[in-house]
Image (cartoon, rainbow, N blue to C red; front, top):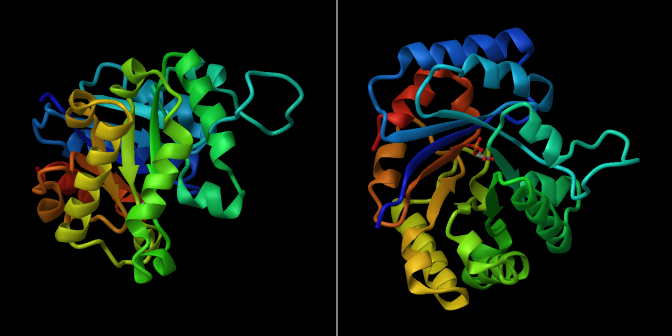
Length: 252
Ligand code: PGA
């Protein structure tokens, strides 16, 4: 088993160019020698190249896009293709974040198309999924997650799946300050691994990286990252403060 440890910062629609630069600088200077942890920034598109350029000559820092078009190119005003993302040096693309699903009505079919674009360009998708509060309350969280995984992932070549990164992000925990308990996170991550084992095979299930996201912060990261099936975090709010992000990276 050689799963990577990853801390990814999803900046969402935050920061100016100047603030983005200062944040990256703060994190680079504040990072202790934690080379084993891969750090990925997801800045707004407008600063993706600037942030990527700031990381030249650093080790274990990467960038990714928060979203991408499901199309390759053409008359899609306002959209950003994976080819464009690749051309500025970013390596990862978030696909299926709940804010995209909820506010922009992204469907499983679209998410599949987006992942196809990501793979065509040889970048890595970080596929996000997770249940809503009412689904958890009614005990449907496992079923919901299984459906989300099945609908989007099942037709991909299993050799490609091994390199995907998954991110379990319960919607009720995102930006709410309410985090999944380590027990809830571990239970769902183990279930996700079981689903991947059934859809593909056991080796892939044991190798795939599964991140937890949803109000993960400098205080709770340690106990979440200590869970056997949690390989790191996808961090929103706490990734906007250099000190907090560095503390989260040190939580393994
Ligand atoms: P949060 O966001 O850490 O602010 O809850 C996580 C995410 O949306 O990826």
